[in-house]
Length: 112
Length: 113
Image (cartoon, rainbow over all chains, first blue to last red; front, side, top):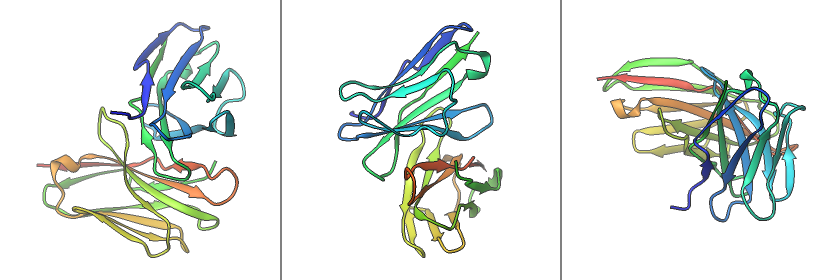
């Protein structure tokens, strides 16, 4: 099954540590989206990437958050110096250009 | 960030009832409207991608309509079954800018046996 793979499924970090979330898109997909789900809320857009390019990062906090999608390897969402408010489920999705999204299983980040 | 609104926020129906919910989106610079179903403990899965005004799509007992001029889409479920219980998300993609996909907050449907 060459679906969207996210890892880890669960990530526990202490305040001030770094969190790295990985997403391998579906085979043949060159577009990756990251969304955050806070408790009792829907999917909030964070960043939209194409291979080696950030297309839209308007939903991502300016500080501490960064994302990349290198030519080789998975897309990475990086959160530096995590705080309790960063605790959430982070979903990655991939698509062909303007196509429907295929979602990964998500990474649940817990900040202690 | 665009405003995509869904109503109602949650809904309880009896098994066998038909139901519908609404997605409102900006009526300008429309490119596509997506519907996804999100079951508990799973990932969202695409139901429909709609691009033309007046589009109607159907998948089994679920169907959707699209009005791009007034900026709304309806999702209908005929004869609801317990397995239809899920959160239904719509997402809007515009023509301008980054052609990004913005989600509404969803309608949480519970079908009571």
